[in-house]
Length: 295
Ligand code: KIV
Image (spheres, rainbow, N blue to C red):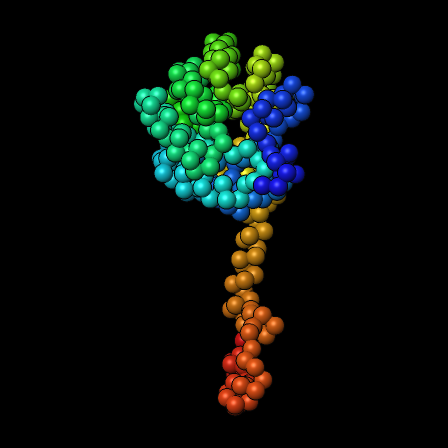
């Protein structure tokens, strides 16, 4: 790595400093080498290989089925595209629900695959797991609020923290994640006011998704932002592009051009050397399309 790149490389200490300086942190998901490369090139600070991979790329109905093997396959691909951003691998459902040693084993595989930090969902009940990972020099990002892996326990994807009891729970969860040693916390699907309270109380940065503008940073699922998802987006998503429509239009034009013989053109074709064409005679000169009936 050249010295200029080393200076701008995003690191865990740099992310912590950002909060002290009041500078916002940007985070997006990526799932393969080209999306990792695009997000990194755009100067985004944190690239998350999210378990949203399950729905956005692999076509599962929720994030629950995705395995750590599938996650690792995509993590390695993203690693090949990302240079400057801090690369975070999301631990899937099941990877941190048994023993702390099991959690550590999966997290070590992530670090060996090129992750620079891991993320896991859940509040104070993840305290021991986070401690274990941090003790093994693995930087951790927490994730509380509307945690998609708790889909069935929550009874659906519902905004969390809307009662005094659940808001107090989330405040305690946030504090526990910080005390366990995480360096950042994702707040998903909670009221803006509660996210602002958590952000003020914590020393580590909060990264919001559907948690309002007062968090220290913001994260979105890349495919939501680009308009590349099959389902309608959630209220908190801002679509910065409509690549789905652009792709549909391009595919229809390709189909039409091939059907009408407009693709490829002569300029898009390779040619025999003139001398060889002569040797081969008339058949090598006349394009087949000239003999096609006009439609
Ligand atoms: O998996 C994911 O994409 C995430 C973000 C939405 C935070 O966890």
